[in-house]
Each structure stands twice: as structure tokens, then as C-alpha cells.
Image (tube, rainbow, N blue to C red; front, side, top):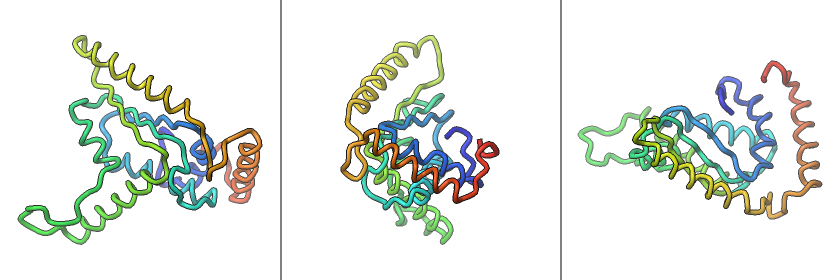
Length: 193
């Protein structure tokens, strides 16, 4: 999903939908710290994939999401988690002025996007790889080791869709449905790729 373009979200998400639906774990790599644009990309991909596959918004319909932030600051992990998955206050928490209607609307929209991600993915994990410096090598090795162990655990879990284990026949049935929907949408796949 690198280079995901919100203007072409529908066609791109239809192509990524089978990956989101059938994968045990999605590894989403971000270059640089996450921002509201990153949140928007993830939410658009999840929402349009659900719509294009005609799947109800059920808890854990997709596998586990592992976000790797390349070139981030490990000290800001709490902030990064909040940007991607936290809940923004809709109330004036000690501010001198109230939020404008536009700001309040933006906060509500971002909270809805975060809720979608928390519901749609079975679990959410964030790992931060900082800027490479000679002094950071040991810290980076610890992060990569932790990431490997979490990824190993996630991949060891069985994958289910609506309580049914993902098996060859289920994958075949789901792929046939996705192919039919893509063909019905008249998408020129080489131009999307």
C-alpha cells in the first residue's frame, strides 16, 4: 500500500482488499513519523476494502496490523500510537477558546477512522526504527528482536473470517468473489498498478 493515493482509493483498495482479508498479518511501513494523512490512508484502505468486498464491519475481520515507523523517534511511541489509534477529545480541555466547528468535525472524523481501525483489525502493533546512528545499533537490535518475536506470535495464530478458519477452499471462494467485483467495476488494473 505504499504510495496509496486517496484520489484513487476505491480502485486501489479493491486491489488490496484480498490482501487485507486473507492475510494473517499486514505489515505497514511508514517512512517518517505518522501524521493524520497516514491515519487517513489506513482508514480509507480498510473502509473501501470492506465496502468493495461487501463485508459488514465486524470486529477483527482483517488480520493483525503491524505498523513499522522507519526514521521515527522511539521516545515518541505514545504520541505515534495516539495519532494512529488514540481518541481525540471533543471537549475544550482547558483551552482558552472552544474548538471551531471545522476542528471539531475533523476530530470526530479522525476518531471514527481510528475506531474503524481498532475494530477491523484483530490487533494493532507499532514499532519504531529510529535514525541509524552508531550509538543506536543496540537499541535497534532490541526493537528488531521484539518485532520478530511479536510477528512470530502473530503468524502462529490461526486466521479466521467470521469464525471460519481460512483454508484453501475459503480463499478460493473469497478470491472468486473479489475477482468478480473487480471485473464488474471495470477497473483497468495495469493503470492502477
